[in-house]
Length: 236
Image 1: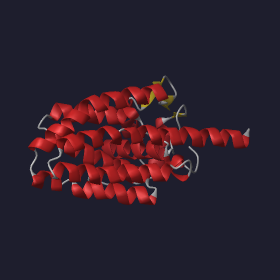
Image 2: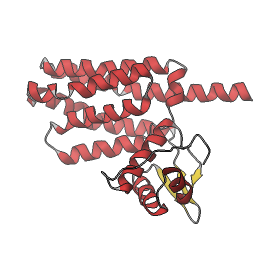
Image 3: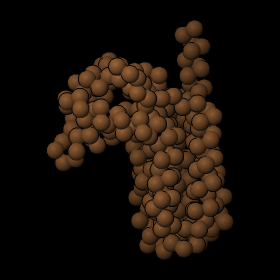
Protein backbone atom coordinates (compact mmCIF):
# COMPACT_ATOMS: atom_id res chain seq x y z
CA UNK A 1 0.00 0.00 0.00
CA UNK A 2 1.00 3.59 -0.41
CA UNK A 3 1.91 6.00 2.38
CA UNK A 4 -1.72 7.21 2.36
CA UNK A 5 -2.94 3.76 3.43
CA UNK A 6 -4.45 3.10 6.85
CA UNK A 7 -2.11 2.66 9.78
CA UNK A 8 -4.00 2.02 12.99
CA UNK A 9 -2.69 0.14 15.99
CA UNK A 10 -4.67 -2.63 17.65
CA UNK A 11 -5.18 -3.27 21.36
CA UNK A 12 -5.75 -6.25 23.60
CA UNK A 13 -9.24 -5.10 24.63
CA UNK A 14 -11.03 -6.32 21.49
CA UNK A 15 -10.48 -9.29 19.16
CA UNK A 16 -7.92 -8.37 16.50
CA UNK A 17 -10.26 -9.53 13.73
CA UNK A 18 -12.96 -7.09 14.88
CA UNK A 19 -10.50 -4.22 15.28
CA UNK A 20 -9.09 -4.75 11.81
CA UNK A 21 -12.59 -4.99 10.31
CA UNK A 22 -13.59 -1.71 12.00
CA UNK A 23 -10.39 -0.03 10.81
CA UNK A 24 -10.93 -1.26 7.25
CA UNK A 25 -14.49 0.08 7.24
CA UNK A 26 -13.16 3.46 8.39
CA UNK A 27 -10.49 3.36 5.68
CA UNK A 28 -13.17 2.64 3.08
CA UNK A 29 -15.24 5.57 4.32
CA UNK A 30 -12.25 7.91 4.24
CA UNK A 31 -11.34 6.80 0.73
CA UNK A 32 -7.99 5.32 1.83
CA UNK A 33 -8.99 2.04 0.21
CA UNK A 34 -10.09 2.76 -3.34
CA UNK A 35 -12.95 1.13 -5.28
CA UNK A 36 -11.73 -1.32 -7.91
CA UNK A 37 -8.29 -1.69 -6.29
CA UNK A 38 -7.06 -5.10 -5.13
CA UNK A 39 -5.38 -5.31 -1.70
CA UNK A 40 -3.54 -8.33 -0.36
CA UNK A 41 -3.92 -9.56 3.21
CA UNK A 42 -0.13 -9.62 3.85
CA UNK A 43 0.27 -6.01 2.69
CA UNK A 44 -2.61 -4.83 4.89
CA UNK A 45 -1.28 -6.90 7.79
CA UNK A 46 2.07 -5.10 7.52
CA UNK A 47 0.27 -1.75 7.70
CA UNK A 48 -1.55 -2.75 10.89
CA UNK A 49 1.32 -4.61 12.50
CA UNK A 50 -0.61 -7.89 12.79
CA UNK A 51 -0.46 -11.29 11.13
CA UNK A 52 -2.22 -11.92 7.84
CA UNK A 53 -4.77 -14.31 9.39
CA UNK A 54 -6.98 -11.75 11.22
CA UNK A 55 -6.79 -9.49 8.17
CA UNK A 56 -8.06 -12.29 5.91
CA UNK A 57 -10.82 -13.03 8.43
CA UNK A 58 -11.77 -9.34 8.61
CA UNK A 59 -11.81 -9.06 4.83
CA UNK A 60 -14.09 -12.09 4.61
CA UNK A 61 -16.45 -10.31 7.02
CA UNK A 62 -16.43 -7.29 4.73
CA UNK A 63 -17.00 -9.54 1.71
CA UNK A 64 -20.15 -10.89 3.37
CA UNK A 65 -21.26 -7.29 3.83
CA UNK A 66 -20.73 -6.62 0.14
CA UNK A 67 -17.91 -4.13 0.74
CA UNK A 68 -15.14 -6.12 -0.95
CA UNK A 69 -14.88 -9.03 -3.36
CA UNK A 70 -12.42 -11.92 -3.17
CA UNK A 71 -9.88 -12.16 -6.00
CA UNK A 72 -8.39 -15.63 -6.31
CA UNK A 73 -4.68 -15.80 -5.42
CA UNK A 74 -4.47 -12.01 -5.16
CA UNK A 75 -6.53 -10.69 -2.29
CA UNK A 76 -9.61 -8.53 -2.11
CA UNK A 77 -11.01 -5.91 -4.45
CA UNK A 78 -12.91 -2.96 -3.02
CA UNK A 79 -16.44 -3.14 -4.44
CA UNK A 80 -17.77 -0.16 -6.36
CA UNK A 81 -21.20 1.31 -5.66
CA UNK A 82 -23.19 2.39 -8.68
CA UNK A 83 -25.79 5.12 -8.68
CA UNK A 84 -28.45 2.45 -9.26
CA UNK A 85 -27.19 0.50 -6.23
CA UNK A 86 -27.61 3.56 -4.05
CA UNK A 87 -31.06 4.31 -5.41
CA UNK A 88 -32.20 0.75 -4.73
CA UNK A 89 -30.84 0.65 -1.18
CA UNK A 90 -32.24 4.10 -0.37
CA UNK A 91 -35.67 3.02 -1.63
CA UNK A 92 -35.64 -0.07 0.59
CA UNK A 93 -34.46 1.96 3.57
CA UNK A 94 -37.38 4.33 3.06
CA UNK A 95 -39.84 1.45 2.98
CA UNK A 96 -38.49 0.20 6.31
CA UNK A 97 -37.47 3.31 8.21
CA UNK A 98 -40.11 5.91 7.33
CA UNK A 99 -43.15 4.04 8.71
CA UNK A 100 -41.11 2.71 11.63
CA UNK A 101 -40.16 6.23 12.68
CA UNK A 102 -43.83 7.23 12.65
CA UNK A 103 -44.70 4.22 14.79
CA UNK A 104 -41.91 4.90 17.27
CA UNK A 105 -43.03 8.54 17.53
CA UNK A 106 -46.39 7.26 18.79
CA UNK A 107 -45.07 4.62 21.19
CA UNK A 108 -41.64 5.62 22.55
CA UNK A 109 -41.30 7.44 25.84
CA UNK A 110 -39.70 10.85 26.15
CA UNK A 111 -36.87 9.26 28.12
CA UNK A 112 -36.13 6.72 25.39
CA UNK A 113 -36.04 9.41 22.73
CA UNK A 114 -33.90 11.74 24.86
CA UNK A 115 -31.20 9.06 25.03
CA UNK A 116 -30.67 9.55 21.31
CA UNK A 117 -29.88 13.26 21.67
CA UNK A 118 -26.09 12.82 22.16
CA UNK A 119 -25.73 10.83 18.92
CA UNK A 120 -27.78 13.43 17.04
CA UNK A 121 -25.58 16.22 18.39
CA UNK A 122 -22.44 14.25 17.49
CA UNK A 123 -23.50 14.09 13.86
CA UNK A 124 -23.82 17.87 13.80
CA UNK A 125 -20.39 18.39 15.37
CA UNK A 126 -18.77 15.96 12.94
CA UNK A 127 -20.56 17.49 9.94
CA UNK A 128 -19.37 20.99 10.79
CA UNK A 129 -15.83 19.64 11.07
CA UNK A 130 -16.13 17.84 7.74
CA UNK A 131 -15.36 14.55 9.51
CA UNK A 132 -17.26 11.98 7.45
CA UNK A 133 -15.95 8.97 9.38
CA UNK A 134 -17.20 10.31 12.72
CA UNK A 135 -20.41 11.53 11.11
CA UNK A 136 -21.27 8.11 9.70
CA UNK A 137 -20.48 6.41 13.01
CA UNK A 138 -22.79 8.75 14.97
CA UNK A 139 -25.38 8.62 12.18
CA UNK A 140 -25.44 4.82 12.38
CA UNK A 141 -25.85 4.88 16.17
CA UNK A 142 -28.65 7.42 15.94
CA UNK A 143 -30.67 5.66 13.25
CA UNK A 144 -30.27 2.12 14.54
CA UNK A 145 -30.93 3.30 18.09
CA UNK A 146 -34.11 4.96 16.88
CA UNK A 147 -35.27 1.86 15.03
CA UNK A 148 -34.50 -0.34 18.03
CA UNK A 149 -37.31 1.43 19.90
CA UNK A 150 -39.75 -0.41 17.63
CA UNK A 151 -38.83 -3.58 19.54
CA UNK A 152 -37.95 -5.63 16.45
CA UNK A 153 -34.27 -6.68 16.42
CA UNK A 154 -34.63 -8.27 12.99
CA UNK A 155 -35.73 -4.93 11.57
CA UNK A 156 -32.67 -3.25 13.10
CA UNK A 157 -30.44 -5.98 11.67
CA UNK A 158 -31.93 -5.54 8.19
CA UNK A 159 -31.55 -1.75 8.34
CA UNK A 160 -27.94 -2.09 9.49
CA UNK A 161 -27.17 -4.41 6.60
CA UNK A 162 -28.71 -1.96 4.13
CA UNK A 163 -26.60 0.84 5.53
CA UNK A 164 -23.42 -1.22 5.13
CA UNK A 165 -24.34 -2.20 1.60
CA UNK A 166 -25.03 1.41 0.67
CA UNK A 167 -21.24 1.80 0.88
CA UNK A 168 -21.00 5.56 1.22
CA UNK A 169 -17.25 5.19 1.07
CA UNK A 170 -14.65 7.53 -0.31
CA UNK A 171 -16.99 10.50 -0.09
CA UNK A 172 -14.62 12.62 1.99
CA UNK A 173 -13.59 14.60 -1.10
CA UNK A 174 -17.17 15.69 -1.63
CA UNK A 175 -17.07 17.61 1.64
CA UNK A 176 -14.66 20.16 0.23
CA UNK A 177 -16.48 20.77 -3.03
CA UNK A 178 -19.89 21.08 -4.66
CA UNK A 179 -21.63 22.00 -1.42
CA UNK A 180 -20.77 18.70 0.26
CA UNK A 181 -20.20 20.18 3.72
CA UNK A 182 -23.46 22.11 3.49
CA UNK A 183 -25.35 18.94 2.58
CA UNK A 184 -23.80 17.05 5.49
CA UNK A 185 -24.62 19.81 8.00
CA UNK A 186 -28.21 19.99 6.74
CA UNK A 187 -28.51 16.24 7.10
CA UNK A 188 -27.15 16.38 10.66
CA UNK A 189 -29.57 19.14 11.62
CA UNK A 190 -32.42 16.93 10.46
CA UNK A 191 -31.46 14.38 13.11
CA UNK A 192 -32.12 16.99 15.77
CA UNK A 193 -35.30 18.20 14.06
CA UNK A 194 -36.57 14.64 13.70
CA UNK A 195 -35.97 14.00 17.38
CA UNK A 196 -37.77 17.20 18.35
CA UNK A 197 -40.80 16.24 16.24
CA UNK A 198 -40.93 12.81 17.85
CA UNK A 199 -40.62 14.26 21.34
CA UNK A 200 -43.55 16.55 20.48
CA UNK A 201 -45.59 13.51 19.47
CA UNK A 202 -45.85 14.68 15.86
CA UNK A 203 -45.78 11.30 14.12
CA UNK A 204 -46.89 12.69 10.75
CA UNK A 205 -44.25 15.39 10.85
CA UNK A 206 -41.59 12.88 11.86
CA UNK A 207 -42.57 10.63 8.97
CA UNK A 208 -42.26 13.49 6.47
CA UNK A 209 -38.93 14.60 7.96
CA UNK A 210 -37.52 11.08 7.79
CA UNK A 211 -38.54 10.70 4.16
CA UNK A 212 -36.87 13.99 3.28
CA UNK A 213 -33.82 13.10 5.36
CA UNK A 214 -33.04 10.10 3.18
CA UNK A 215 -32.74 12.37 0.13
CA UNK A 216 -29.57 13.87 1.61
CA UNK A 217 -27.82 10.56 1.02
CA UNK A 218 -28.48 11.05 -2.67
CA UNK A 219 -27.38 14.68 -2.52
CA UNK A 220 -24.04 13.79 -0.95
CA UNK A 221 -23.48 11.06 -3.52
CA UNK A 222 -24.25 13.52 -6.33
CA UNK A 223 -21.78 15.98 -4.82
CA UNK A 224 -19.08 13.32 -4.89
CA UNK A 225 -19.87 12.48 -8.54
CA UNK A 226 -19.55 16.16 -9.48
CA UNK A 227 -16.28 16.40 -7.55
CA UNK A 228 -14.88 13.38 -9.41
CA UNK A 229 -16.06 14.71 -12.78
CA UNK A 230 -14.46 18.08 -12.07
CA UNK A 231 -11.21 16.35 -11.14
CA UNK A 232 -11.16 14.40 -14.37
CA UNK A 233 -11.82 17.53 -16.34
CA UNK A 234 -8.99 19.37 -14.62
CA UNK A 235 -6.48 16.63 -15.33
CA UNK A 236 -7.73 15.61 -18.78
